[in-house]
Length: 208
Ligand code: GRF
Image (cartoon, rainbow, N blue to C red):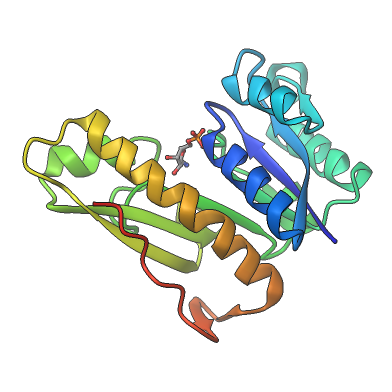
């Protein structure tokens, strides 16, 4: 059983989707939720789902490296071999990247390399895109720059508000993220340099 740590800062809907998916497939287990925000709703979800959660503020630490070293220690203490970012609003530094090289995935609510950063959906809508989407990628030292494993378009519909578009993006995220994590863990998708090689391509999720 592969043990996963999920890092989240906010609502935690992807954390919940991952936890529920892996409870059904048993390919992996979400062993711990690590959170940096004391009042984040993801903590309530973890309590409801019965997932161990650990939350400490970065302010308690001397700096970014010290905080990331603490996260790596928590992962080791929970015998975790793989890390999934799910709305984690901090940039991971060297202590985590060195502890889990190419073993950390992130999900972004836009079609990278367009609209990186923490306002992906807003920036895409403000730009006027007709096709939004999601990207799941391996984490490197940059902001949303790591090798892309999977992308899925989400059309912008006439009459969409930010909220309705966000909802459809979230639906696609919840379907796709656990399956891409599973495929990466199983070796069904591997990296050749920056490029993902799939043994069998994962279909797009219909988010319309
Ligand atoms: C998602 O849109 C994800 O793409 C981004 O942060 C959001 C997290 O949502 N990285 P939730 O906390 O999983 O509900």
